[in-house]
Image (cartoon, rainbow, N blue to C red; front, side, top):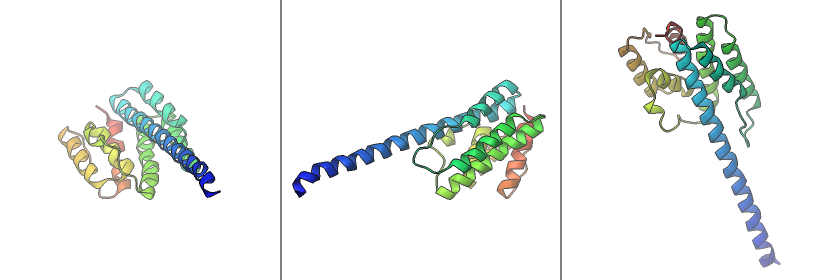
Length: 176
């Protein structure tokens, strides 16, 4: 009897493993797309491209599925903040709400022990700063803020993450 059920057990275990692998692949793809849209939105706002910013925020609003994870409330808050950023009346309001999105990201990333994705170090300074805020990564923040300052950005040397978000919002709102 045991010999007869062993292949069935193996089949069930492999089926669960494959399902988990597919879910992980889908989550990684969703989050990668989400991050790309977020970074494109920040660059568009900084460059004064209102249409590009709105398009990127619409994509962030839609989000995607994260199968196997119970993140409904967190994602709803993130999508609402993206919508609020998109609907901001002034560039300052849009920048403030946009950079605040990184706080939503960091809350989820830090509570789950996630680190920034590979290749995040190779971003231009503004995008590197946004990645640093989204993961509350001190070393990334120091490098990105130094690069932004050397490019002429008036970025204060704030010590806490909320103040850093506010400082970067001012840089994004000021634009090029």
